[in-house]
Image 1 (cartoon, rainbow, N blue to C red):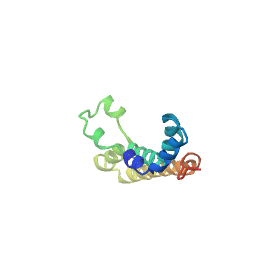
Image 2 (image 1 turned 180 degrees about the horizontal axis):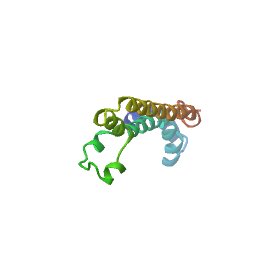
Image 3 (image 1 turned 90 degrees about the vertical axis):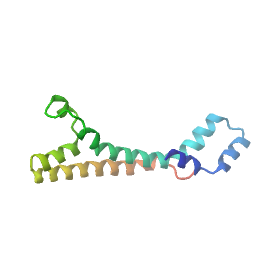
Image 4 (image 1 turned 180 degrees about the vertical axis):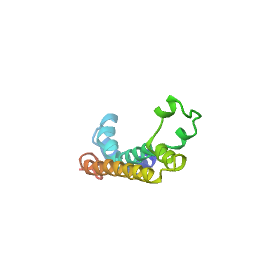
Length: 123
């Protein structure tokens, strides 16, 4: 993702900065980072959503009915356990809606805060 973001920055910005006498640190701080913020924003949102949906790594661990099993549990693992192991479909459905609401609220907050730190153009 970051490689694509770096490749999308026009070389003319770097060339103009070098002509104006900017050093490497100034170019990085004033051109590269601001123009990478849309990519950073996308990566942060997808990582947070992915972290809330971790399932396979926890589900495949062979630690059933132990303290480690309770400590390593995630919301998605609990949804699957309640739905298919304990046959509590309604409770699992409610947990899924809570997970959706949590992800929605976090994403909504990030979308509101993005106006302060995501730059789509250099001023």
